[in-house]
Length: 282
Image (cartoon, rainbow, N blue to C red):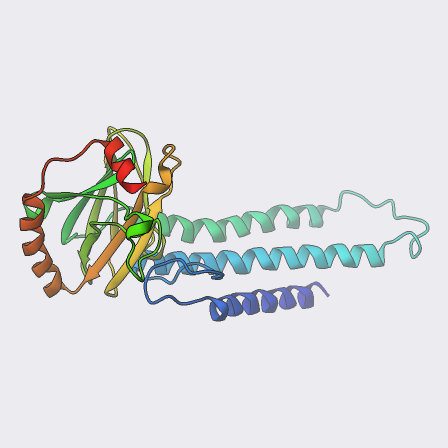
């Protein structure tokens, strides 16, 4: 009986996972879409592993839930007062106590192993080909390219009345991060005031920006396009004015952008105050 119930639970879990994948709206790039189901599509090795881990957890949790509900239903039917007017006095079933202690431990081990592998995989890149430094401010981002003579620029959200067709509100910025595809990028994240968090869901990026220290992560974008994220830390009243926009280009187009960007940002004036930037975003 229990074997049949467990088999049914696994089939139901697999059906839910499959259905979620089919119902999910697939945007052309890394952008949230209305009524989407499941995670955003993966465009990096880290996010692909996040998807795999998520699906594993989905199967486990659905299986456990269905099994527990099935056992409860069986107990209510089989051992109700009508069918058992004289209840059994049996207690302290050694085998049962060993099983309900050992099985959860085994489930936690099954979860812990891929979880730790994913954690170490996403923490630090092997042989990065370039570096991007991200600095969080109240409330905007500053990006520095150490490999390109420390080229630096600020990234401010575009006001709602200045958006062009196709630009999402509170996500599009004036100066997006530009990165080459098929390139392992080391990302160094810090802040100069309070804790922020640099997060781009479709690329598996989520790293705290902490004042006084540098946190490290990495990304390798697999497809050219536009990818959006936001600060994922409640950093203050204008927290929602800290969107992230990444433009992924081919390596040839990226080199052309670097040449143009050096001239563009070298000609700009010094940075404005954070209050002025918040006013611009508002």
